[in-house]
Amino acid sequence: MDQLAAIYPWLKAGHVIFVIFWMAGLFMLPRYFVYHQESEPGSAEEARWVDREAKLRKIILTPAMIIVWLLGLVLASTGQWWVAGWLHIKLLLVLALSGYHGWMVGYSKKLAKGERRLSGKALRLLNEVPGVTAAVIVILVVVKPF
Image: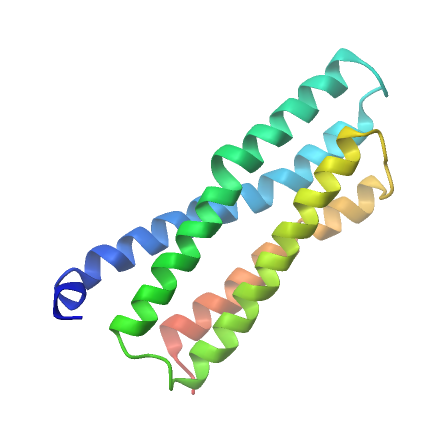
């Protein structure tokens, strides 16, 4: 633990960097879905959106989420934050974002199969979920209200 405490600022920096990557992907994917759904079914443009969505998921989104979780758990242990009330709420919100992430991955795979279940308006509204959640998480971490 002493070695982790010595590199705590680096762990925290890495955590923040990968949170930014993850959030960027969570903002991008629903926007991709809107453009994907606006493309002609079976067209070359639709195939490009399927490819873009898969790359975003595999190269940015999922690896970033995994690293965020790993570094976050190490930070919580190193900083002995487990008893902090704000951390419990933060973890609940990060778990919800992880579920949202999983749902987005599943919807991406359905879109790739040609299933277009949501409207562009619904997808645009879903695009607000990570931003609102991230704002609450930042307040919890910076202000530590309880």
